[in-house]
Length: 490
Image (cartoon, rainbow, N blue to C red; front, side, top):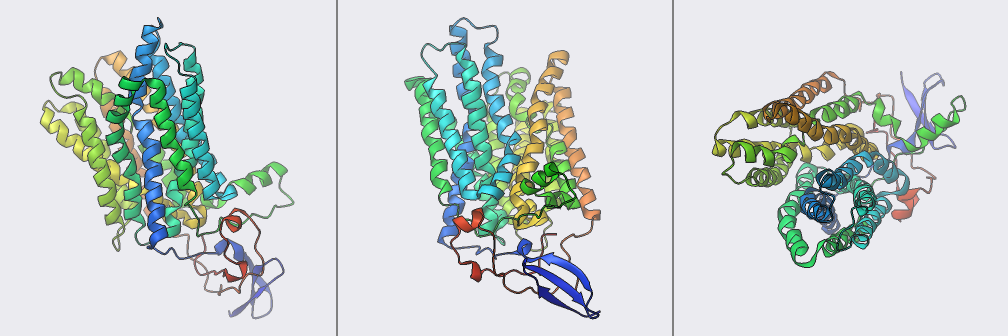
């Protein structure tokens, strides 16, 4: 069957057969693509800004122990020693929980407001969260102020971190394609660099100038996210607006207008989005409990050294495996599977060794493959959902991960309280990564959904495009943008 294409007044391509019957109608607006430059001054500046955003966000989150110890001491000094530990820990738990839980909102806002505005809003919220935390932190500290910190430091900063983090990964696909893996590795290594530097720095500020000034320093750091947001100029348009269907409810049409349901039609993404949260259920258990484990099993050894080893090799792993993932014919999903198998096995081996040196080798390997899995999140999202769906793909994935990440350490703590041993908690924490990695084999059995019919031919230039967020941020004349059906998102 031969065919020809026409463009109607709604900018739709109509595929017509030889007998003039309409075969299909495609919306040309949903396949607008721009080839990432993969180099250039602005591309590298964007990568550096993303590195800083990632480092600031997770540097502050990962070094909460400094704030935790200060709060705990002040609560005990104020006479609230019975619940001092749980109250101080709650603030940090809310921060990490909000960062992941509100990531789907961040993905939606990226499509609706744009990358710049979403990151800018995130920077405003993180800065305000720290500013209000410092304002309400007096000396001597009042126990009732913990409730205020749960909102300002926990929810407000955590929500801002969620809004800023997703665009940090999504913007990279606009500027890099062949080098996307190594650039993601470099950017995500920012959290390791800041986590290595900040504890000593913030501890010095807290000990010499007080908790209030420590929070002010963190407020200044958070304000750099606002500056970085101004650099995030997108090169790809967001997904096209979905036409409302008359036979659907208004609530359904509303959801369709804000959520990219096309991502959830991609079976490979659905399996991946289920496998990752399963694999991460016990992910934070070593990070939270390994210090206490070392205190009990190796009382004469440095309890902080294993965590430092994880941080160092995780940063190296992000860069090394990011570079490997860019090599020709490398399957990024299979590489991520391997990382989860090693993470699971190393977590199981932690309580089974009686040698401290051997334990250090185990956590070094654990950190290396931890870096591998993290550096591949962004590239795989782009690979499965394309540039139009990547922001929401990343956001919803992180949102799904929030439940397991938050629940894993408390459950491990409950098991420890019952058994007075960390053997069972660490072994159980190592099982979910093995299960999640095994589920990802299903992806290999699914067909590639990016193939299109041979009947579809190149569309003509668009005459009009809606003035949405990307148009306001990107001043490129509309008539210069050309649509093609060569590589649709589905």
